Length: 156
Image 1: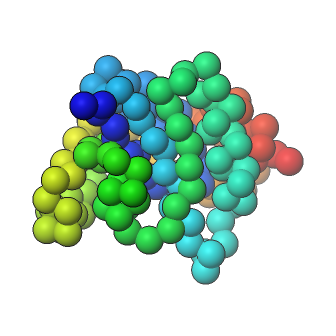
Image 2: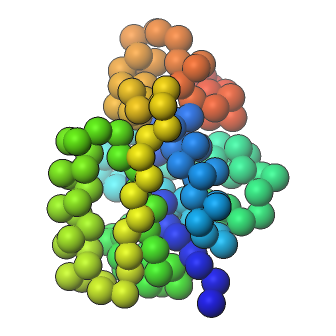
């Protein structure tokens, strides 16, 4: 059976840390679906279609990575696409506490879907989309924090 994982988030913007998790996750899974959660009530830095386009461009050479938008519960999306795994990144202890609570609740909602955690790679644990947005909005240099494919869309 094909091992499909969903890597879900707002990805506003998608960072080098996100990219690293996906590339490392490809050693564990046959396919990774990068699922951009759409909340139309939330105004983000980047439009959802730009997020999707930028991430797809970043992984255009990797046919085992699919980029999709979704609404609703992540476990419902996983079920709809046939994914039995969720991929999540951990930067620190606070992330663990938060992500562990979500994973435990997801197991109650969908016991057949397992969450896999990958620790942030050294040198990437300080990167968060929230911090990147703040730096960018205040005209700081984020070129070392986001892939070029994403940066070019942020600047448009």
